[in-house]
Length: 67
Image 1 (cartoon, rainbow, N blue to C red):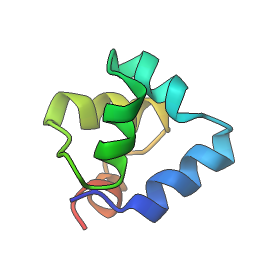
Image 2 (cartoon, rainbow, N blue to C red):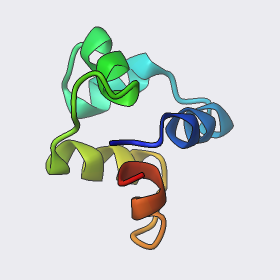
Image 3 (cartoon, rainbow, N blue to C red):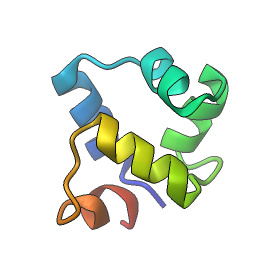
Image 4 (spheres, helix red, strand yellow):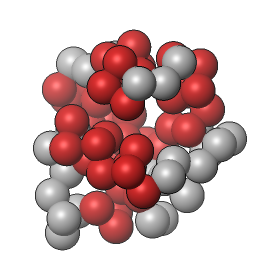
């Protein structure tokens, strides 16, 4: 389960939209919305790509994706 508030906060800090995330993950924007809001799960490759996009380090990964 992702930490929705932390993901959205980092996106806002970096001025990255859900459309930007969708393009980077090669997903539809509604799918990204569902994943960020814990309606659908991220798979590990998607989580890794999102972490890279948002500059989330390996030591921060748990805070964002496993809470």
